[in-house]
Amino acid sequence: MALTDEGFASRRELQNKIGEESLDAAAQKLVAMGVEALQVQQIMKQNPELVRRRADTLGPIVMWLAGMGMCVDQVSKVVKEDPGLFHNDVRKTLIPRAGKLSAIGMNGSQLVKAIAKCPQILRLDHEDILRWLLDLGMKESQVAETIVSFPQLLTLSLEENLKRKANTLLENGLSATELVSVITTKPNLLTYSLDRLVYRVQVLRDKGVLTVATLCFSMKLTDERFASRFV
Image 1: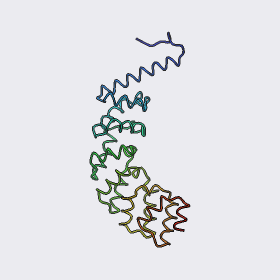
Image 2: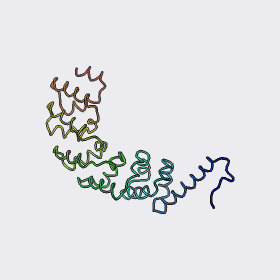
Image 3: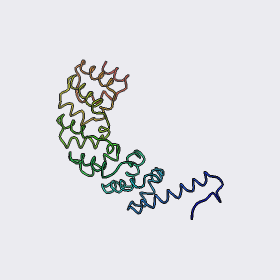
Image 4: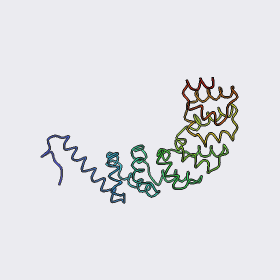
């Protein structure tokens, strides 16, 4: 039966009623696609507007994530943290990007862990970063393990961030092997500001104590604790 203004106290109430019915219809559409009812309920709690407006792309992506081995809670976490992911086409965008990660040796379990931690990696073209990591001398297995432990690495700018910080470490005395060790053992070190990295690397170098271990330890210290210990 068509909805009219009759029986509703205000236009807003009418709009709310229409919204409720369109949300219910979108939820039923997802179930009809094959998405588990429990999963639909969880997503509706996290982002009902996404269900209402993006059911056509949401359904295939949710089913693909579940097919990879993601549990209901993991998929719900992805919906909460990166709703923009569900604006993409699963076949044209997401599967090819996941395929590039599989190509370096990441298995299904590793992919699920990385995507659950940082779903943005499926929205970015990270082929250049993967190639750069391999060119540094990292083995494919090392690249895969590093991405699983810190997938945010793939969201950083290659030219403005990663290369500049890697060059800083090499120019101040770390060997290529030590640089690889830094990236594999403490990849989040590359998220600190360049100024912080340059200053602390140079202090450690001038003190003659620049090693992978001291660098990784010192970068997490407050300015006061770093100064009292090394300056």
